[in-house]
Length: 217
Image (tube, rainbow, N blue to C red):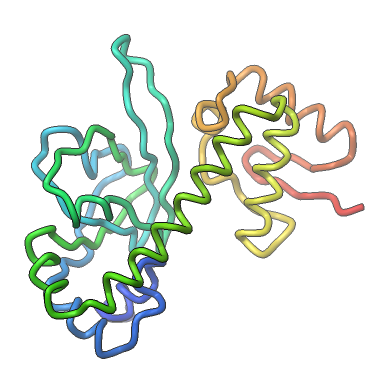
């Protein structure tokens, strides 16, 4: 098995991907690597005292919260190379979301206290982070537009095209279970299933369980 490289791991995260090697070498010593979480276990949850940034080395996880009635709302999914909790590197605040492993998952992380000390010596890192935050805000706004201005079918198709582009292939596997995807897109599982069938009938996609193929014109 190939030996895990802290620098190689950090560099795969979008937050640090554009940093020069010298800066990655400064981050590596303050990071923790390949913490194992079994499928279904909680990586983060309210009140656990974990206030740093984490990113996925292997596996995947979903981010969700619960309303007062205990209903689950999926906010997103983390796959290999994705990160979450960057805001916790800048503010001492408890998180309110749950992050649960969708499969056996390995997590790498950086604590707020260690990162704050590093920032004082590396101002270029601050600029890089600001640029990445901007990109994530755009993604959040895109999904907000979907939920507020598109009907369920167009919302779903827009998401599928986005996933196809992200994966660089017309055939890909949905990163979320269908019930979680429905929650993310602001619709019901029943409506999602109907719209998948409708899009397939129209010849726009092919569906094989969670495997989706975008049919090009």
